[in-house]
Amino acid sequence: MRPTEKPFTLTAQKVSCGRCCLRELCAPIDVTPQQEDLLHALVKQQHLSIRRGDHLYRGGMPFHSLFAIHTGSFKTYMLTDDGRERVEGFYLSGDMLGMDGISGDTYTLSAVALEDTGICVLPFHRLEELTRESPVVQRQFHRMMSREILRDKGIMMMLGQMTAEERLAAFLLNLSQRYEARGFSATELSLRMSRQDIANYLGLKPETVSRLLSRFQDDGIIAISGKNVHIVHIDRLRAVLGFGDGIYFDQLP
Amino acid sequence: MRPTEKPFTLTAQKVSCGRCCLRELCAPIDVTPQQEDLLHALVKQQHLSIRRGDHLYRGGMPFHSLFAIHTGSFKTYMLTDDGRERVEGFYLSGDMLGMDGISGDTYTLSAVALEDTGICVLPFHRLEELTRESPVVQRQFHRMMSREILRDKGIMMMLGQMTAEERLAAFLLNLSQRYEARGFSATELSLRMSRQDIANYLGLKPETVSRLLSRFQDDGIIAISGKNVHIVHIDRLRAVLGFGDGIYFDQLP
DNA sequence: CGTTAATTTGACATCATTCAATGGCTGTGG
DNA sequence: CCACAGCCATTGAATGATGTCAAATTAACG
Image 1 (tube, rainbow over the protein chains, first blue to last red):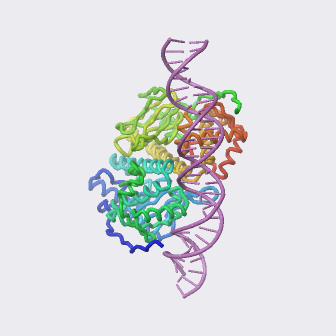
Image 2 (image 1 turned 180 degrees about the vertical axis):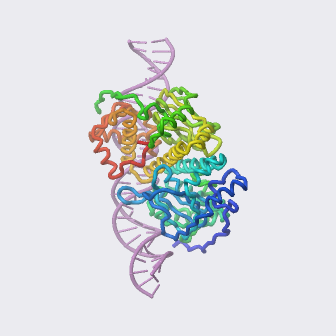
């Protein structure tokens, strides 16, 4: 029926935040080399490799550390009382994971690798010590947490008042923006998550996501080849959102 | 058509966190009297009265302070690009406002008083100083921010996978829980916000909220008299939610 | 290469919205 | 105190978007 498009490849590999996997803690203010050294001292001790499908942490596990994604991507989800899962977010290289654990002694969400990944471990008590020593690091850490709050507000906005079509457009544009910030192409997306995960995240059913992707393709806005999505007309995708640029529905530019 | 029920009155006035309006910063761990004095020194300098309908802050205003609600209630909302508003939350006495401003130099949301209110001002740079001096205060502040994140995750869960009926039940149960924690009746709610605000918050239309309230009343679960809602069978209201107790859709017990 | 799971697509049902009309409350000024 | 205006809330009927169920196709993986 619909022609199978040629497969796409990602065009670059480097993370935008220079030599640092602590994008979240460094951005948007440039920290001094000295402060960056402090942060690196924090993380360079412990690295972990998590294979696709394995968990970085699970809800209920004791909380000790935050994690910065060095390479790869994760999804986080929350289990409902009756055992279903609710996808909370997708995290790419440079993103910080584990902030859901700070308020209690345990993690609330679960984080599972969408591909083979490398992550940096930040013992939280060390980070707290560090923030007491350096007001700049403290401020950055607070900004990071507040940014997570804003991101969630943005998702709430999406879930609360966007149509299915708008949600999917916002999702694709958000990914595009984040890929671009990491040095990948903004128009050739490699979706690491299943349609079901996307649907769950957007508060929709997989069938709806599938239908909408097909509709976008029929309209010539995107071209799909399995997990690869080529954004043909990013302006028309933005037009689907009307005025809502998705600036708030965001995970750090 | 439906009989007008007798009006209800709230049964108590006191805030649960003793002499402190900093519920969020004190809970759930008991701070020592000494630490509490520190916190009080923070806030006792500045108090504000905001009248019903007036704004505590607006999106775009420069961020300097957090606010603890002493008496009264607020709603927060975000303006969309085309001028409509999206209600983000309702805040009661003891709740903290303004955390949306930490990540930038300006507030992102706007906060408007739903009734005449009294609030305590916490200059953020003072709070940051304080957290550098006291690891306990620091931890509490981090918990508070993380709790805001969890709360938002809970709302996302609601918006993402609950039906309209479940959302309204969750909303009423959440309010009930929070009223009770503040020494009010858990079954006699005085809704300070309009139906439109409720609908907006829940991602629904006012007509739907109105219809569902009527249905709950017809079913004998609640009794409505204008802005006063009497929960007749709180267990049946919980049953509407199935297993989801709304434990995550919460604003500190 | 075969088995299994994921995705796509169609037909239909359902829930929530939209449009429209009525009724009730609140605050204001005479 | 009453009357009026304006907004908010309720209710009904019809529409439309998204979910449900089922089947066919494709992709994933050992």
